[in-house]
Length: 413
Image 1 (spheres, helix red, strand yellow):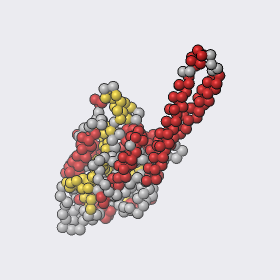
Image 2 (tube, rainbow, N blue to C red; image 1 turned 90 degrees about the vertical axis):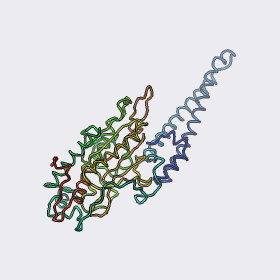
Image 3 (cartoon, rainbow, N blue to C red; image 1 turned 180 degrees about the vertical axis):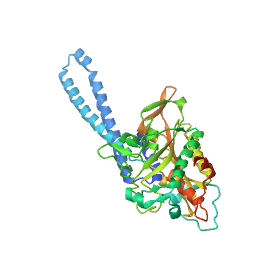
Image 4 (cartoon, rainbow, N blue to C red; image 1 turned 30 degrees about the vertical axis):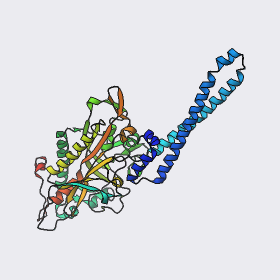
């Protein structure tokens, strides 16, 4: 959540920064109105309390001068009752402001470029050369002779956007998970195994709730949800905790299945396994001090990029513009892998620094000397397993329809 004090004290400045994310002007106007009312209500309450204090001090003077104190008592009782009413009104305004603020996205970093969507993102660099084929490369769903991906049975078991991975592809998927976790461990990320079901507070902490509830799978009759990403449980491991600064940064990696309704993706990527309701992902999450989060962010981007390079997969780094930036992110670099069958780059990792946005919601702090400071939280895919499987199938395909295994994975097979 954004800092409400900063919002109230510098509303126009914050509103201008949020314009980068294409925030609804009506939402900002409502926020401004409540913020103004809150300031007025605080001033009114402070005046009533000051009057109460001043009149309370008159008792000794009235007694000394022999004045009737009954009128003063009546005034104080009436004023006290009014203070109670105005305090309740203040609490209601504060609650309204907080509820509304939970739907306000994070403020973009100053170096986030302007733009409306992915067309305005900036390519920072390309890594490895795109492979050249002496035949027309196929897309991953066209390798029917290998019998690796069964779409029909996935639908039979569940519904559309579910699939079954079989045979050597299942082994390759398992090899990828182990390889990714080992790779990340060598970069200082400690492996953690987390629940796939989390409570409402966890999703509030990382920003999936309340705004994105429609994209979550909820457990009927419970305030519990299937995780959309391991970012949620990993970050919330330190919910409502104060961490000694010397223990930072905390760098974690985890493999989980992820579950998303893909509510806003109707008609997109309907073929193949690019966009599924259930998919495996290896995640990176870091909790850092405010003065080290930029360095950690670069480390995470480098880790994901080097992982792709170690698998021989061409990719590029893309700085997201404000309009394409996620709700909780202050800055994001996407890693897009080359898919020869589609003849285009596709997102395979997204590394974000949320600054203190999630930490404020989840109350994650660290102690620096005698002061408690909100931590910075960072997250990134390393990598989406299904999309990495696709990238290997398409980049390592042979003319005879077989697929080579990247050298780094041979020992894991």
